[in-house]
Length: 506
Image (cartoon, rainbow, N blue to C red):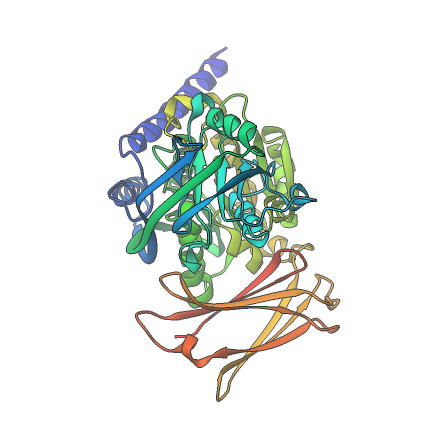
């Protein structure tokens, strides 16, 4: 009986610590990268890291172009409809009839001509809104209206376009589900829609919060993003709460392997923090990581979807600690881009494509990206179980030899890249192969150059020859020093990237 009392007492204390973090973060309000709330969030986490005993905890700043909305409007048959402009939406006005295309996947456009029309798409838990947007653009739509799937006609917001390319080519707004149902009913009628978005890009600064516990070998990389839309208690207050709990416990525990903790910034806007960390630590500093654990909404409400994606190397450890029971939707990481339209919509997209093994949680909630995502929506008993289970899993990973993490995930491609200076700029030669090194004929190979403020200055898409090879010239203008350094990115895959290669050009 005494053990049971102690267990109950321990679980209650853990729930209390997690609740404290969730409420502390909620008091900061909207914490999107570059905002006052985002800066306050980074300062709070830095203090918590240091209080946990992570002596070298520090901030790592990065720069980016933030979406700054000036005004927007949406009228249907002369009636103003409540809405929010989606971040990095295109600017300008659009006028035309509505066409409902379901969730906006490619098959939803069969036998539908949307050229010169405004498409109406419904939220899809897996097919990402940015993929819906790209599909609408490719089909010739004038604009996009996104129908939220949240209670009480709440509007779900988020990034709609690739922010590295600046503002998107067509306007896009989000509406509540009740209003969306009315618009779906009106689609196909003669009702005209008038849309307008007026926005700009402004320089902004985000902050990753980074700390390290010393140990042997390549470190375990444990992270969660701290930026939010609105209060963001499930997305991603839950991830930060578990991250801090793990940091506090690991700082007191006997360990073998080094551990690096990261509270990423700018995930919601464009995965900025994840890529900034990868560039600075893995690509430029040459640090090596045994595996990543990414806490992307590790818990939400009691009836919400609970999912976990992982690479091949972690499958055994996750089964041994019953993670697949805690997260019933447990799949290989390669399934994520297949479901989401080509992207891994969380901080470790680059790390995964680079070849670092790992696992990422992903829960869904009806309050996702709404003003009602507050601490009361979190299932605290489940979040406490998740924190305890991740502690056991990290202990299991800590005990593994380096060789256990060495095999490359069999679903990832291999990408060989060489660059040679030329009179025109830089000759880029790339060769894409499958995991077994079989050349991938007609593979898609994308290459681009980013300034270190995540502004893209060059992009091209190539098709590999029968040997899996392709080449192009990166023009001299894209390589010239400006306000920052340059990074050359190359990705390869059939329908979506399954490998990424990054080279600093400064």
